[in-house]
Image (cartoon, rainbow, N blue to C red; front, side):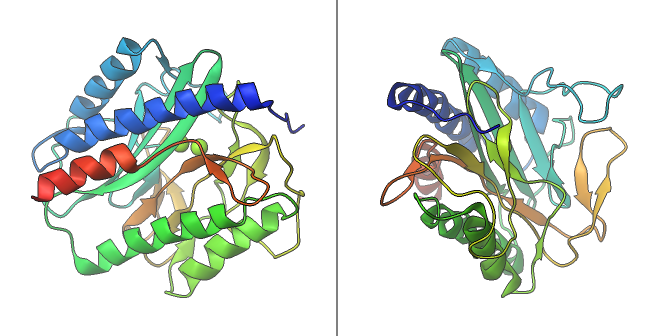
Length: 267
Ligand code: MG
Ligand code: MG
């Protein structure tokens, strides 16, 4: 069942999502060769709690009953790990990429957004994968307007990525966002134009392309959480939470804070 949100509820969702954006900026400040994803996780958890929110990922139940709940406040997925990587003590190395996915629970509503960062100097081919995945996210967001359908979003993402021979992960999707982190509907990153649920005002969804360099086949990691590419090649993941708009989508999360940090680091 898709739960439609009032304007007031959308403002609360915006607050939770802006906090995710500011948390990702704190993480961006620290990303460099030698830092561990556990260090990123610690800083993120403190920042979220200091702002009166709860990290939604921490203790999140496993999709496989009986397996352990998620131990971190961030999902940190390095190189061939696509999503759901558990923060650990392995230092990031020059040339790595790391997807940082962050969730907050603030005033009864959830924020959810992810960004894939470069660590030091990254291969141009891998940078192109990241750039294309981010472009695909925004092309999907362009379709998140009243009267379009979920298939229009998925199709926009898929077409853009497959044009370059990249793989579009099928097993995991975006989702509705509200009082729960994962609500209906599922928002696939593939699909046919004009197919699927019709988009309405009040719908809030996370769009999150998970795109692989080559094969879209996935494997489950031994830690019961991580999802990796079967060929070991890198994967990218970018995510925004958006409210469906009359003329254009209202992006509730933000990359502005983190991208400002990245610009300042370059100078
Ligand atoms: Mg997420
Ligand atoms: Mg999500």
